[in-house]
Length: 170
Image (cartoon, rainbow, N blue to C red):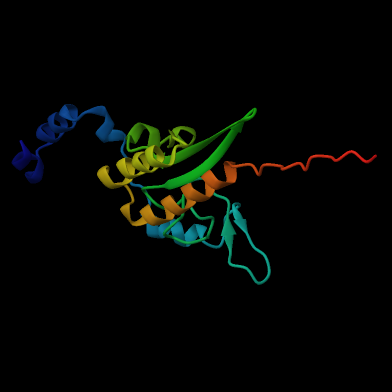
């Protein structure tokens, strides 16, 4: 059938297109990450510029907040972010990654996948290394993720107020 398609037989071309699954008809070319970065690096609503400081960004999925192609959550195919959410008094650590499913890639609201990370240092770091190292997901950012995880954990600790006992004057 393929030889007939290459030669140009109309009936072979029609039968070959009928046998293709529907998803192959709808697949469109996506822009490469380098092109997206060139468009986004200086023109983004997430940019935060100030004098005598590097250009920062508040985009979702950016690990460090620095406007750099390595950490960008908009232009990379594999996004990695670590953030804190608070519900009432409960604070939790959230790992954000991009979904590998094609159906989610077409829906911007469902594109990111969040995963809760444990607050216990040993279990949390084991969970992060399992996702990243064993899952081959952005292994170049393991050091930055562990540093940020430790900083988030220390930010949860509240300083204890030590009150001096009052002495009675007579």
